[in-house]
Amino acid sequence: MIDVVYFAWVRERIGVPREQVETNAKTVAELVSELSAREDRYELAFSDLSAIRVAVNQTLVEFDAPLEGATEVAFFPPMTGG
Amino acid sequence: MSVRVQEQDFDLAAELAGFGDGAGAIVTFTGIVRNNPAGDLREMLIEHYPAMTKPALEQIETDALNRWQLTDSRIIHRFGALKPGAQIMMVATASTHRQNAFEAAEFLMDYLKSRAPFWKKEITTSGEVWVQGKDADVAALKRW
Image 1: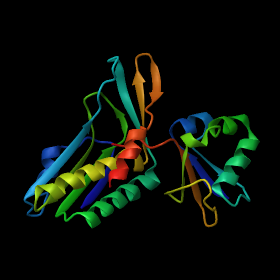
Image 2: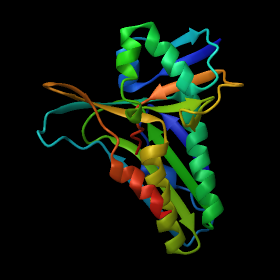
Image 3: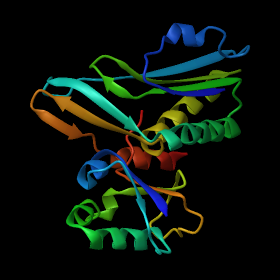
């Protein structure tokens, strides 16, 4: 089980801020494919991955990052701090 | 050296009392909610990723401390619903000489813009829109 969390418009499109996902995905990209195949709202949210950033265990990573040891995966738009 | 993520406002003068530890130069930057070009901004909603925000800011601060000789540093970033004119965040850097303090403050700001997990949504009288990250903000990191 992995906790998957969403922020900003990604959260709005998926409709929940957090959920537990049972997955055998080896990488973030595989997790995205699995979720996108589930329901339209995921496919819509993940339709343009260039507009999405991902963090595994609260650290920014690329989409090819492995999920080994991952307890929390977060998807969100480019950050706008400051 | 400190990082705070908070909903409540901050008082710049109070933050600077005792700040610097004998520094010869203190640089501060305060970010303010500005109105949009149409002038109809009601609120700026600032969302963040609580489990990641403080560690990310602390990492950015550590990177600055490794790079410049600073006697002190502070980052405060607010979240929640903020009105136009409200303070959003501040950075302060202290050093023996001003160049280190100026450069480190700019470095902190550049990294805060696109590496700290905050998202802003403008609530206007005509609707809501997420503020998009700017390519220029990402490009700004290249100079460091």
